[in-house]
Image (tube, rainbow, N blue to C red):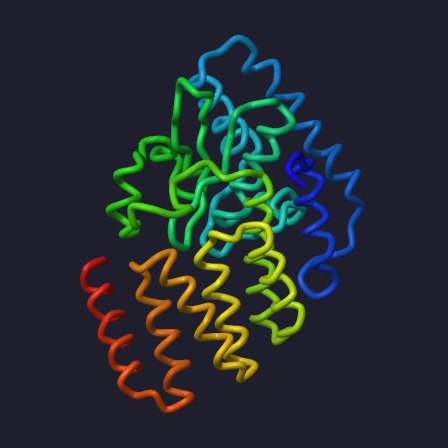
Length: 270
């Protein structure tokens, strides 16, 4: 799956969410819709510099087509196109799909609880955060994210993601959406797939741990929370979640240790 067609795979992930999370739709019709967008953009970016290409993409997507990045926006690609609204995963998916179709070096990037995209052609590297206010779209440096999200020095955060890893992020979002409507088995299946696609993604392990905890599989939950902490030791949420798991089996010393660690990390972030 190393050389996957990202765009079609993202639509397949969206289609598989029906009927609980999405409508039934024809993938080829949406690929054609994206083809129309890329045709409009292609002539505008021919021969331009990376910064000019990014400016053209932003102008077309957010001003000509009136797309909007929202915290409560859509994460499935067909819904992003239909509603012209997406959260950080949804809008980033749109940018990566357009980059694939236009043969542009656009990659997904992660921070804790957030995704953005990056132009990186080996010479020019520009972070583009398409889910926030447009004037700040590419003014955010890696150092901003490190400070804002208390990012550890090693791990998956802030590096260019492969297409396969980005699909893992979308599956993580789909799994949590299934969890939110009580579909535990579908949620667990999606988190298993997300971890298979992106085995260094702390949030996927944390989220699978939440599902195991809901299913009263406490040992598996603790194992996943611990793996997530090993990958990102700066996440208060994961310490709190592991503390909840220890509480279920009465290991109070470990409950208090995790609660204290989570609290101290929250204070550091603030």
